[in-house]
Image 1 (cartoon, helix red, strand yellow):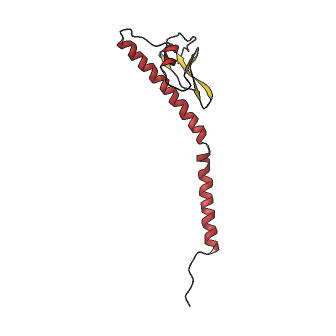
Image 2: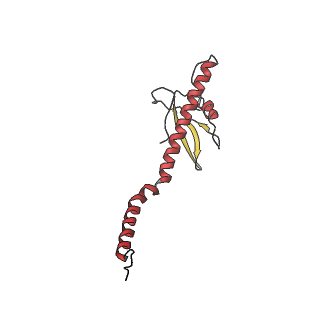
Image 3: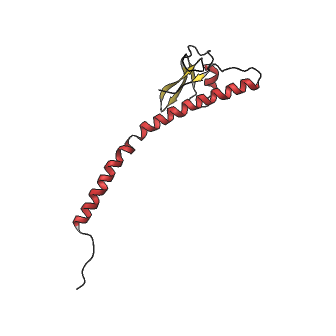
Length: 128
């Protein structure tokens, strides 16, 4: 008589337990994706404001009037939906329905925050 081949119940249970352990160790990595996405969105928006400032500085230099843009000009230069808004402390942007402010500063060392929308932006910070 030919012997039947296949997996025993114990072998199947061992494989299921191993898969469960692997899934349990990998799960925390995937559960915090929304938090990581928000951090990335904040960093990306800060980079966009920084890039817009650089573009405006170059545009001013090309026009023969070198200088930094104001917070109002900077906010208008950023292409987001909804539009970025100039506020005294920087440029306010919306990420997933929540407003965040990218801080702007009047000096290159990022030590003196802008106090009005007409202040010239010499440095752009990151969204905390």
